[in-house]
Structure formats: structure tokens, C-alpha cells
Length: 412
Image (cartoon, rainbow, N blue to C red):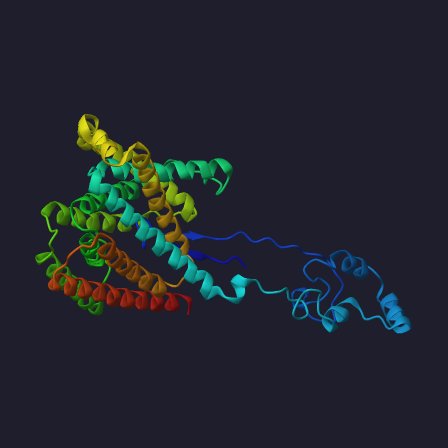
């Protein structure tokens, strides 16, 4: 029976970007045989990892009298009994192949995915901020992030890893608003990163669940439980406390981060309407292409003239041409890879693990950015950040449990 698998994709860190449904194709081989006196093939009968395929088919066509005669004269067991009585070569027991490392230790594999996701995300945020310290042009850098990722996707398609999924006008119409919201959220996030401390931007972005809940109730008409609303109160209070005493605070960075939250909220809304059977890797590639096209005009208008007059020359004078180019390349590569690994990681885990992982990721980024850049924060800012993250954790935990209960109710 074909099974249905639900996949959560991510876009800028991308939890909740898209819910994709795909039904994996199943193939079966049916070999007509005589009635069996023992268990099924999958239990270790005639066919053990295809090694006895030819002989078992041959013996199936032999009259039963011949089986009995051979067994009686020579003490040879029928193939089913022989397979069941002696373990297959190279296996621990009859009909069982040696378990792979991934099967024996799945928690280690999943854990490595999380660590790789966190590592790429932290490296991206650190390198991104270092670039802004000597090249403060967020619209242009946003284009570079997406451009490197799109080139990566095009090369992957060219070599067939993965095979490019076909797209038509209907799918493009569904993905267009998702890509536009992704572009706006990405650019405004970078404007905030360029103007305030990385830790402060991520603290403000902790408000994203609040905007998601508000949009779900007042735009989509979904009923949000009182417990969820109460869990968001610490998030709002914590962000407010952190903002009031943030040493790097300015209104451009604050408003940009808030616009980013709203954009990613609408991205989630449109994503729910853009249900498609396309796999998450291809889907993220198409969304990146749309976002790149959207980001190019504002970059040319807002950053273009300054870059041509003095922006490029100033950056090259500060760090050199070689470092400037390699920094832009690697920040784009880390941006794409951390989003892709985030998508692959979230496909492996349950919603609750996914939610906890996102909270821990934000803690990692805030903590490492403070250490690497030596950002000075006031006591109130530190307390507010902790309260906000705790609120996000509580919200994520409650929401994941609600979703799990809904899933069980549907399958019951």
C-alpha cells in the first residue's frame, strides 16, 4: 500500500515554509509459485537478499514428488526449511542483512544533521556581519546570497542531482507570492543585520510566532487556543525589554526586522495555499529563483549608484579584491547550504523536535554572535532575550503537541 509522507520545508531558516505531500512510488515483483508450507519470502524463505532467486524459481517448478524423493534419499531440506534452519551468509540471523550504522544509531545521524545545520547557520551569520562591517550594502549582498544559491541549484540540475522537477504556469502562479514574500523577508532581515547587532535582530525575529498566530486567527480564520496566546506573552515582554536598553538600537534595524517577521508570516500563509507534490529541494530552488528576480531591481536602484561611485572601491581598499570576492561567494554558499540542510533536518524529525531545534538554533546564533563580535549588552537586554527565547520554546512545545493531537485524531 502506498504511503503518504508529509514534509516540512524551510526557507530562511526555514521552519514552516511549506508543507509538501508526496507519495513515494512503490514497485513490486510478483513471482508465481506453488503454495508454501512455511512463511513468506520476507521472513527468510526461498529468497534471501536475492541470492537464491534463480534456484528457488527453478525448484518451484519441480514436482512435489521429486522434492520428497530428494529429501528422503539425501536428507536435503526443501529450500524454505534450509533457509530457515541456517543463517544467511554475512547476516546475524536468518533472512536478515547486517544493520547499517544509520539503522543502528539513528539518533547519531539526526544529531549530526542538527549540528551541521547549527554550524552552517552560525558561520553564515558571523561572515555576513563581518562583510557588513566593511561593505554596508544589504540590498546588493541579499542578491549575492540568492544568486550563489541559484547557480548552485542550476549546476545541480545540470548534473542530475537532483533531477529538475517540471514546472508549469499553474505551479508558478502558486509559488510566485511565496517567492515574493521570501524575497522581502530576506532583504529586510539583511537590512537589520547590517544596522544593528546580530543578537538584537534575532531577538526581534523571535516575535515571528506572534505574527504567525495573529495571521492564523485573524486572516485564515483558524482558532488559536488560549494556551498558545498566553505562551506568546513572554515573547512580547522579552523583546520589549531587550529593545528598550539595546546599545545598538536604531529604528531602521528594528523596523526592518519587524517587516521581515510580517513577510515570513505571509510566506507561511501563501505556502499553505501552494500545496504541490514537488520535492522540497526543487521547490526551494524555484522559490530562490523567484526571490532573486524580485531582489535585483531594488538592489540596482538603492545600492547600485553608491556601489559604482565608491562602494566597491572602498571594500577592495579595505580587504583586497580576492578576499572581497571570496567572502561574497562563501556567504552566499553558506546561506543556501544552511537553508537546504535545515530542510533536510526537519524532514527527519517530529514536529516537537523540529520546534525545539529551532529554538536552540536561535540560542546558538545569539550566543556565538555575542562572543565573536564582543557585543556589549545591558543586563536588562540579556534578561529580555532569555525571557523571549523561553516564550518561543513554550509556544513551540504547546503548538507541536496540539498538531500531534490533531494528527492522531485524523488517523484514529
